[in-house]
Image (cartoon, rainbow, N blue to C red; front, top):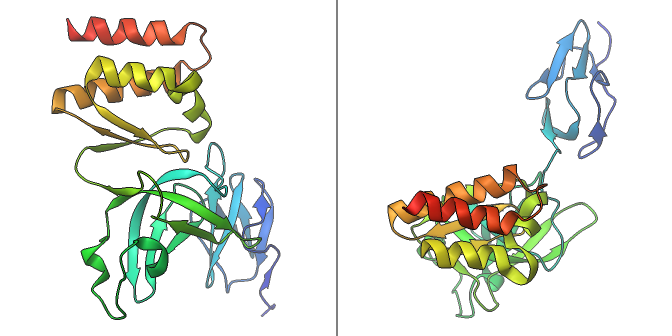
Length: 230
């Protein structure tokens, strides 16, 4: 039996048809398929190797973490040293105990008292290493756990359009719907208001994402909101 061989490395960009591995030791998963002895890529994306399982994370519109970005993340794991946070990118970030609070957190404390699995947080990226390890902090103005409300996910490339020049677009949506809105630079947006107002704000945000290439967009969205409220 021929020896199995891996042809790619973790976090490498791969393209459709590329042979990722040869032999039967490796297993295809999301974005990959087996053809005889080979595993090939079925889409463009970022290679993930989890033991013997090969999967591809799509990169189209995917957020690339940058130091200094304020983002909305979702807590996906809690361990003795801190929290793992999904950043809506190919990379999971770490929030360590020392960066989680200005208060002293004693060793062995129940960390779920601060943030539990499934919680959304407004956090800041402090570092992205050459291996794409992402470090977060909760120490800074406005950084906090986001309680209630709803989360909207948009293409991170459309975030500047949703914010608008000097915050004009998001301010208009806030004023027109009465919702509190926080836009993360990673494409997650937190909306909080009455159920009816939240639905309207989400519809407006989705409309901006779809029509971001139109000129006069702020006026179009304001008219859309005003018409909806009648």
